[in-house]
Each structure stands twice: as structure tokens, then as C-alpha cells.
Image (cartoon, rainbow, N blue to C red; front, side):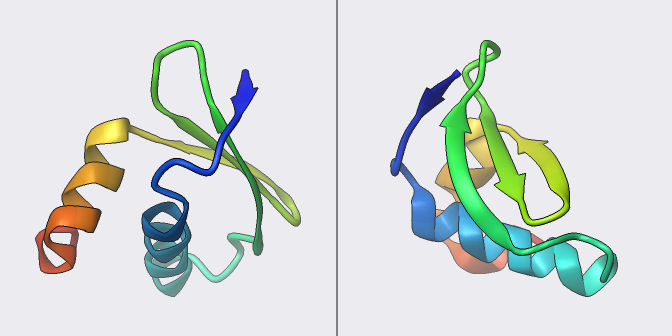
Length: 66
């Protein structure tokens, strides 16, 4: 995995949205591009993965990501 800041603000926002659905999701710490060319997000209590498309969609139109 490669550390990145690409789409960082969008990834942080999507992580925050996910936390509203599941309060057990920890706080954002770092962002990596994974081997599937998506994002692995290191959290204060683990990690989650999201696709590049979700980050791009959120950046282009935040309301498009429920």
C-alpha cells in the first residue's frame, strides 16, 4: 500500500458519514491506496476500505453518496 492524500477530504467526509450509521467506526488517521486501487483508511480502532469511485463521486457531488 502507498500512503496518499489524494481525495483525502472526501474520504474523511465519507468516513464521517459512515460513523453516523455505525458509531463504532473510529477516527480517521491515514489514507492509503491499496492493491485494488481503492482506498484503505486507517482509523483509531482499525481500518476500512472504500472504492476510488466513492471518493470521486463524493468530491464531484456530495449529495450523491447516501
